[in-house]
Length: 154
Figure: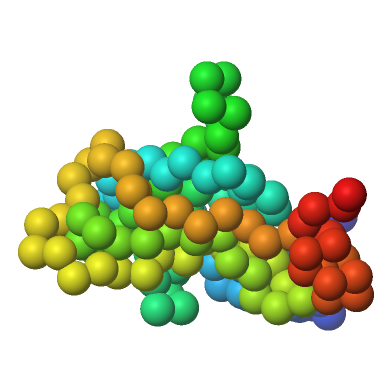
């Protein structure tokens, strides 16, 4: 079976467009084909609403890692996060970690606010200062009904 030159050229063009699309998708989502060297840190939150494995960990708006595991501590009933932080990043011992959102309709991410301690967190250490996710529904209730009424309905 003989192929015409234009059929071969069309097939090559389709394959090229597909390859460009895959590269674009990987770059725009921040996905990587290989995994960078990282170390694990722990954090305990009262509420980790919107967080799941794969959620970005950011420092100053730059991605420095991802959430690798999310479990529930059966003794404290708190969400336990395991974070994979890029190997070259050293975080001060008194750093704060919080669940943040990109906007009202934006996605959830983990934000690290570095402290000023001279000692750094070591692999396996836990953050001491955590701030949980803020529920949009709770904020709206407080705004429309008054903060005392929403917090303490008598």
